[in-house]
Amino acid sequence: MTASQLLAEIAHLNDDPSVHGILVQLPLPKHISEPIITAAVSPFKDVDGFSPINVGELAKRGGKPYFVPCTPKGVMVLLEESKVHIKGKRAVVLGRSDIVGKPVSYLLEKANATVTVCHSKTENIKDIVSSLQKVTSFYLLTVNVGFSSGYSCCRNRDSTLRQRRMA
Image (tube, rainbow, N blue to C red):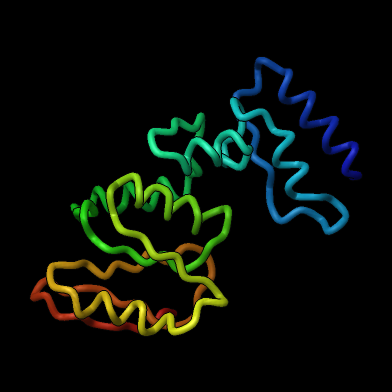
């Protein structure tokens, strides 16, 4: 499929009232521009939340995106269901992807956390995460989304930290 064909299909789906949501499966083939394709999806049908309107509304204070990306929303539901109190806490987001990292950081900020975003070029990530361990009354919560190799830390009921090798 060419980029032109895909754009034509997206336009057709945007105009079809029986279609309520469009999800662009990423990554796209190298010959097709991800920003052009994701921007072509109507913000009213952009279930990934990638359109400039949805991204902007998610990022701004008081914004109301038509769709919140499902994985970041799921992370927030997990925190809520686990009774993790976010307000006033420090949070570190590892990764700045458009799919998970950035939206999670925006949602954590909207929940009144102080957010630090780390990525592959961040120096001293271990120190940043370790600095959280020195703060009293915190939760160090690792929500593993996607691929990971390394360790996960979590807080035991007796308030001690344990670390486990992730399979």
